[in-house]
Length: 484
Ligand SMILES: [Zn+2]
Ligand SMILES: [Zn+2]
Ligand SMILES: [Zn+2]
Image (cartoon, rainbow, N blue to C red; front, side, top):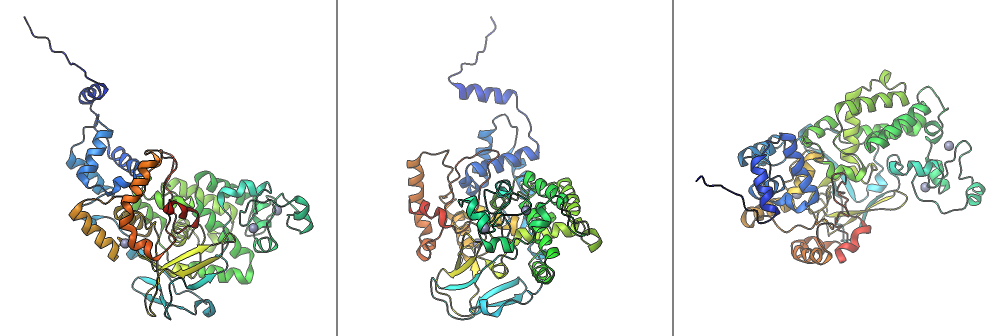
C-alpha cells in the first residue's frame, strides 16, 4: 500500500513557509532595493545592521523570494546601498565647485574668517570663542522663501504671504495698517514682511505681465512644484524672480547665489540611485530625490513659462538642474544663508544655530573654540547612527564622512557590531520600550550632550510607504524629547 504524505500544519507561520517554498519568485533588483529602503525607513536602526543580519531580515519579510545572499549583496552594492568596501560607493564631492563670495560684510564676520581651499569654502574662528558665544547672525536669508505648504493658506489671507506665520490679527487691524494686498486676498503679518515681498505683484496676480515675468505662468509653475513637492525648484524660481524684479539688489543677490557651492541635481540623483534613497534628508525641505528626467523637463518648461526670457539668457535644463543642486546642498531649513553656507560638516560640530520665526539666523559656539580652528556644523541629525549619517552625507553632499566620530563609530562597529540606535518608530514600540531604548543609547551620546543643549531627536509618528523621515537639525521644538 503506497504511503500517503501529509503536511501537518502547526500554525500559520509554517503554512506560510511551505507556500513560500512552492510559490517562490525571483525579485528584480528594484524590488530588493525598495524593500531595503522601506525597512530602513520603518526601522532606522536596521541601517546599522551588518549585511548578513540585514539579509536575514529582508528574507524574513519576503519569504517567497528566491534570493541568494550573494545576489543580495551584489544588488545592494550595484545600487549604492551597501558595500563592505565603502570606497566602492559613488561620491561626487570632487565635482562640487564654488566661487569666491562677493562683498561679504566685514562687520558680521568680526569673529570669523573665510578661507578658500581644496575643500571649497570654509569658515575659521578669527578669535577665541567661548562656549555659548554668538559667532555671527544673519538677519535675512538670501531671499526669504515662503513655505510651499502654506501657499494655499496665504492665498486665502490666513497666513502671512511671506513668512507663512499663521495670522490671528483682525481684518480691521490688517486694513488699518495697510497689511493687505489691493489686488488679491493676500495679507502680511508685518510691514517688514510686506516690504520684503517685492515679487508678490509680479508672481501672484495672474494678469500681471512684464517682459520677464508671466504671472499666470508662475502660478502654473508653483502649482506643479507643490504637487510634486519640489521645494528646490520653487525656491530657485523665487530667487530668480527677485533678481529680475529688484534692479540694484537683484544683481547682488544673483552674484551671491551664483557663488554658492554647486553640483548638478543629476549627480545627486545618481548617488541616490534607488527610488526613495536619500530622500531622508531632502524631505525635511520637501525635496525628494525621486524625480525623473521627465519631471525635470516638465518643471523646466513651466519655469520658462513663468520667466519667458530664461532661455535667451542662456539658462538651459542643465543650468537649471545645477541651480537645483546648488539650492539643495546649501539650504538650511529651506532657506539660503550666505555666511552659514561657508560652514563645513562634522558629526561632532563645534557650532549650533537658531532660526527665529522671522527667518533670522544666529550661530553660536557649542564649545570653546580656539582662534584658527575651523567652525563646523552638522548637515545631518547627529543622533543618527554612523551608517545612516554617512549615507545621508554621501547622497546629499557627495562625500563619505571621515570625521573622528565616524572613524571611531566604524571601528566600534567592527569590534562589537552595530550600536543601539536612537531612532525608533513610535508606531512599532510601546512607550516603555522606547524609553528604555533611549536610556540604553544615552551613554553613547554623553560626549555629544555634554557640550550642548540642542540636540534633536527623531521619533517618527507614523511609518509607512508614504511617510518620509525628517532629518531636522538642532531644533528647539524637539529638545523635550531628549529630556524625556
Ligand atoms: Zn510675515
Ligand atoms: Zn496680491
Ligand atoms: Zn562624520
